[in-house]
Image 1: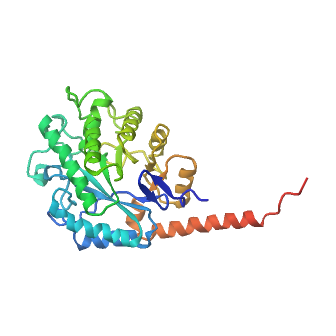
Image 2 (image 1 turned 120 degrees about the horizontal axis):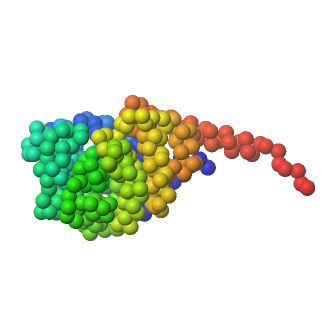
Length: 349
């Protein structure tokens, strides 16, 4: 059977196939971050037919000071739940599972967007934004943990199938993990275990509030692709800790200043990262990065580079891509089975 068509069980989460739409910012929300008809129409179109086993909603801010951009979705307030329920329902009606990605931008934002000076693990200028943030106090870190917990609770109340914690692309949790931006000398800085302490506290807080039967994904920037930044050996250590803490799926990406990396191209260009992570964990791993061809997706799964395939820009550009991809792989599979059935049997010896 085609690997892409195989179902997958990840803790309490059952997926019908291995095809995932990863989070992609749309800038379609209302100014206060509420779901509107434009957002509902967009995800209704992308999920049509249920060909995608899982859709991960674009990164949504957990607090106003963690807002990354204008017209970004919000999970920062209980008033958002009603609109988020409609969003989950739209996707479920079409037959796909739905996750919310929850995020704090840290210093990867501006005062013009948040209304306050951005915050970060350390007083280090963000490579992408250039502005100087305020260093977070322990009390402020504790508030961020509660904000992630509350955002996850709202996600569950809205009827989503799980939540994805964002620790990639230069946002706050990536900033804590990365030596480029984490220069702390307390329990949150220094070695790998200290730099992921906040991640583990967030996972623990979500599990405490929502129990073991609510799926948690974590998007991990497994390499900063910058000198002095996160390397894959760091992420292998982190991945094992995240699995032990109760994460059900790891969604692998890279790039401190964004997911588009100079000199990285081709189908599944993060495959070396996902393959390295897959070798050290038993939970499923999602691979994204430049995948536009369904046969390439099938090959990446066959070669055990990952357990799930995320297709972003191809689906962004063509909402029919999932249907076309599944039909094509089914045709290839049917032709293979027909050829096998019609081939002459080995003579009896």
